[in-house]
Length: 125
Ligand SMILES: [Zn+2]
Figure 1 (tube, rainbow, N blue to C red):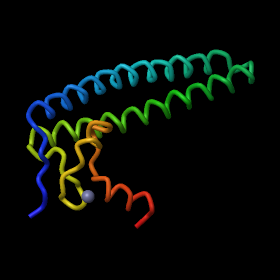
Figure 2: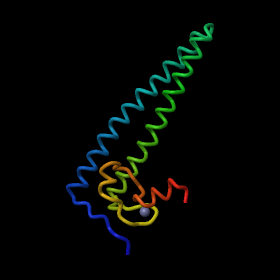
Figure 3: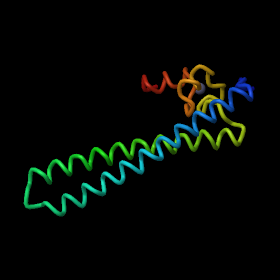
Figure 4: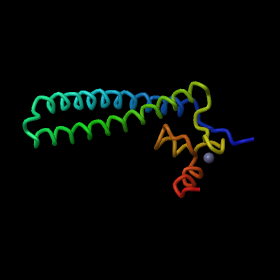
């Protein structure tokens, strides 16, 4: 039988609040970045007689898009963590089924792997 996580209700509530705060921040970021990408798109179309402007607008748009994609990936990880919390499966390593260290969850509330599995992941084995 795998080790169960020993998070108290209070710890879980704290982590849930952190996830919800982070989620709200990221949702705003995504909206801002998508708006930025749109404006640059419009600008690029309107000023295509000036190649320098068009180039920098397209660079800015790509940056905004890649930041927005990154934020979206984090958002889906946060949603997963919240779902696991609702299902009572939060804090359990996806790979080995052991409890994820509390300190690790406090640093990264949407972590899905325990410290050992994460290390193995990073060394590629
Ligand atoms: Zn593990």
